[in-house]
Length: 321
Image 1: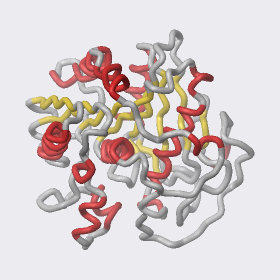
Image 2: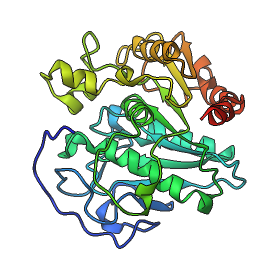
Image 3: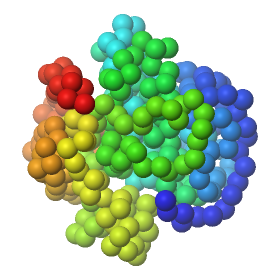
Image 4: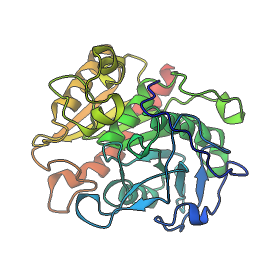
């Protein structure tokens, strides 16, 4: 666990983990949906934020959330649940979460097709939190959804995680290191596995080593001058194994922020290890394309994910466990 910041700040206590209206704590994000706080009080990990949440109003940060003090999930319940759930992690280099461009649009798209979706609003190192807290939040989210699966008409063995860019790094780490003990916990949620049953990674940051050492993800998680040990410890390909959940990766060949070699590297490592892995490389699209525009070939990726999900790979994986 990496503690780059040690400032401790108390948070307003939450009476229970459940659906709540969080009022003035987060005025930047309208409370239109059921929300589930991840922790029943002060979250684990060092650090904290000052002031209310912020929602970007212009430029690349338009609609991006930051200064998060209360990590939580926004719930998208489908009219006719198909029994599967997806926890969605927007990207943003661990200094903001691209909700408007990435996590919210796909959450609505999946909800309309029967998936129960949990949009993860995780804590950010750049806000003053310890660099390990996003990973704590993602593990906790998996455990809460699995524990409460019956409440949402979810099959507890059909819970996946999806992430974009830095959110892809977060989702990938959660999928590949579910057993990593990042925090101490003893409530009912801690009795179940944090392992996703499948993972969906879009233009993910995979390696924190050279020559892929220019990402904001790397700077926020391991700093400007990390050791080789830290680079390896937080690079996803380090943990590729036959035990990895089925994984599908989407990337574009002209991505300058998270070059396509990130996705290629992880696919090759997973495939070599004997895991179920699939890679789709689009000709163009750059970085941060979310659902994509209708005229773009890459806009087919959500339907491609559904076909992959329905292809039987998830069922085959469960039968082999």
